[in-house]
Length: 301
Image (cartoon, rainbow, N blue to C red):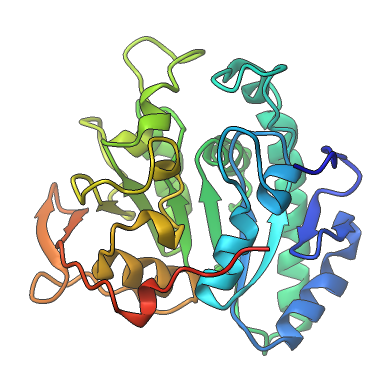
């Protein structure tokens, strides 16, 4: 694992591990758009970042940036916030939680730069936004600080992958977001990481990514991928966007591909949806296709 550590001066990273300042956003975005691939703005979760997502980690494989970029043929720009846990206490949630407010301020600045870029380059395709795990709390605080109130639609799709945000009360901020953006939230009650993510929570709350009986955001789409089989190893099942964790489920792979490449996501009971609950919770059908091109696992650096 690389020794590279969080640096508030350079919260943006491309897959070549180049660090960028927020005021470099227009430059780096233009470089990525010129590659003529869909662009994904990725907000990572808890861990010693940016090293974990760029170079790998001790307790999990990591390399999320490369899993996304190579797995879906997209260009990734990662937003880095101070998500490191204390020492080797990889179950610690309280320390990174204390830094989510600062992360939200920086993410809000990035969104403003994205809006300026879009005004200057109206022909450029909108990127997708992928927010993983504890990064959802950074997003939540950005939204609650009116991060979208004066903005038009910024993204082709917004995908919250196994959000670690509290399920209690989540509809308030998620509806503010999904009123503006086409928004998807994955739910997996078999997620071993979120099952252990319990400290520093209000009484009665748990991670939204495990599913919830709380009121839902009526403009969001919740994608239930529970019980799809052994999705990866005990801890890898948390990175559900990684093709090695999909248990050869082709509809799951197609969903992530559509969401991350900016396409219209198909959620059709006649095709890939087994059931719809509470109006907005879509349970994907199970269909294993080991040889489907979509499920080809990329070679990581």
